[in-house]
Length: 454
Ligand code: PLP
Image (spheres, helix red, strand yellow):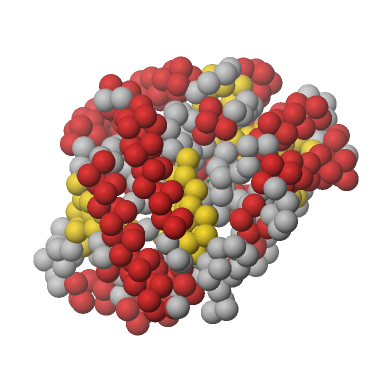
């Protein structure tokens, strides 16, 4: 690449001049310039100044097998030479699509045996909106089309997916949500639980679903969508009472349950799918990210035998040029082979997670930290000036979190902040030694942040 040898400042200036970034404040970018990442191996990324950083976010929660696996590059090159592109519209198919769909039907629990491929998690959730509404229309219930989701849930950035999401900042830009989407409150006990026990609070939040169904009328509600554990909302691990109650309500009112497994899928929670960890029986699963470990863009909606039999009874007028892209599908298959053969999900759940959980829990003793929560390899800590009252900082939401995030970068650690929660989601291959380094750098960053705010 012609620009490979340009100095960092020049790359940053060119970037700011021509590249529009997702979820980035353009003013800040112009002032400071973007960090230029040039290479990565294992759990470590390297920037254009040669600084090595432990990536405790696995990119954007996606590089499950870690960086630098040549096998995926080799498979991609082979597939590009053999069949770089063909579509799956109009009764055509190709071998990578067939093999990946079959593999997913074996991995995904229950009778979710059919995959509609998409280019990303957002595309997949848009597919879900159209598919569940079309499903009920075909069943003679065209009014059953409202989808209930949650405030502070995240389901992607397309118009449909962002409408499902409960990010008010996203709704404020571009006139969202679209019609027939409703939201209920999230099960975030730390921020919203008040004096209730986590158990009572989990039940109360789940029962908001029942109340919303009754308010709208059960013959108007198509589906409920949620992440088994909210990721972008701040790694919100719901109280144990929450999911069984949600499942009961969906079953009782014949509401399709969509588990958005874009983050939780493919080992993140210590089992193959977050639905297994949280005891959920979904009718549809949204998948992306860990499906290819981020090496190629691909997502999918995995649906039950029942839904597939209804949708496949005619033509579903929906699809993307890159649905089941052969190179992405081949890369995903190779990624799944590595996850399985190297027992990476077992490593995440049985070796890395228990060790990390022990160290993570100790962070709760830090004077800047309230709760420290973790499930598998998804963790969060809540920063607070007073753990006992679960107080917020006077500086305003996110100010201290951002400060801590910047200290982490300076100390060689990618740890993201969501408001004043610090979150991690490292590659699943992380070793005990890497975890020691992560905790050491996180603690140093917390100490420095505390010294600045106390
Ligand atoms: N769903 C969840 C739970 C996500 O976390 C994300 C992305 O972070 C998406 C959907 C959207 O996926 P994508 O960014 O691939 O469109």
